[in-house]
Length: 106
Image (cartoon, rainbow, N blue to C red):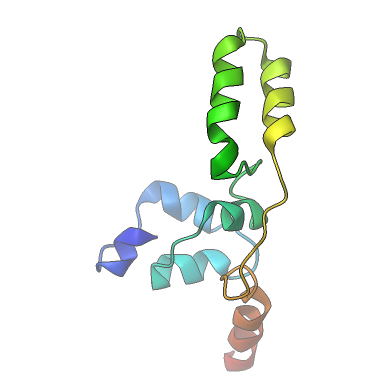
């Protein structure tokens, strides 16, 4: 969380969703102030879909032309969604190391 990087405590909303992340990722993010990119948010379960930046304008245009039909909205978002590439140094890829280190120190 960015506020942790400048010495502030995370707020109540962040405390709620961070505590529900897999393993100790939420604790790590809250304490270290690490920021996640869009693909990382999808990988750890904070986002339901990932749309690359290059496709956001196309998605927005299609959504603007659509009425309020919820099932159509979901289909359009799925049309532009992709499986993100997660960088090797992402906190999401280090999740097992954080958990193992925590267990060894217990």
